[in-house]
Each structure stands twice: as structure tokens, then as C-alpha cells.
Image (cartoon, rainbow, N blue to C red; front, side, top):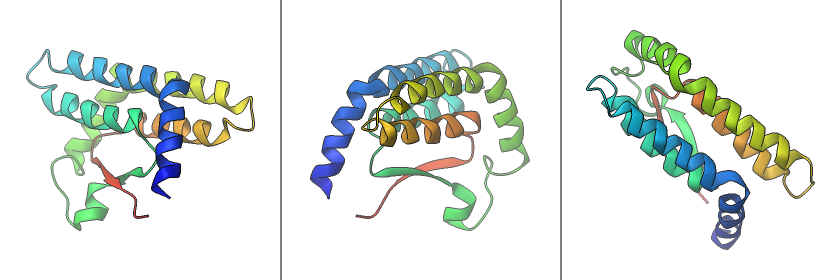
Amino acid sequence: MSLLRLLFNIAWFVLGGFVMGLAWWLAGLLCFISIVGIPFGRACFVIGEMAFWPFGQESVNRKHLTGHEDLGTGSFGLIGNVIWFLFFGIWLAIGHLAHALACFITIIGIPFAIQHIKLALLSLTPIGQTIVTKPV
């Protein structure tokens, strides 16, 4: 199973993962310009890593994972997601959706398009989410 994940991740990297991973990291660098944006930038680098190698990983709400609210899963997280959406989220989502449409053209590209759609949804509201490894 891990060999199949590796093959899918390598194909993903070529079919848009590299470009979108760099876009996430660029958004992270832009967030680091201000002190307030540092938590957003850290999230960008974590999600950017997932954008490079998404197969075998998934995003989970931290409240569901830990069982209690924290700063990112409460009302501050909602405000942060609104700010994120206005500045970066919509643009990253458009990038993922454009790659998804390109991948949906072929039958072989459908699993990659589904991953792009998952990342597009994550790019709309990333605050309060964490990336975990899927069990085999």
C-alpha cells in the first residue's frame, strides 16, 4: 500500500502538486511579514507540505481530534478564517480548482482532481485544522 501512495504522490507532484505547494509556501512567507500573520504562515507551511505529498494525509479539525476547543477552533478561529479567506483563501482555492479541472479531463487524473478539491476546501478555512497521517 505504501508503494502505491509513493507512486501517486510522485505523479501528484508533477501534476500540480509542486506548483500549489509553492503557492502555499509563498502565502506563508507573505503572512510572516507581519507579527499577526505568523500563525497563518505556520499553517501555510504545514498545509503546503501536504500540498506537495497529499496521498496518505488528511486534514482534521483539532477540536474533534483533541476533544476540546483551543484558540484556533473557537471564535478567534472563525475571525481568522474570515480574514484568511479574504486575503489568501479564495486565490489558493481558485488555483486548486483550476488544477482539478485540468486533472478531471482524463480518467487517470480523477484521483488527483479529488485531492485538489479537498485542498481547495481546506484552503477556504484552514484555521483550526491539523494534518494527520492516514492509517494504512
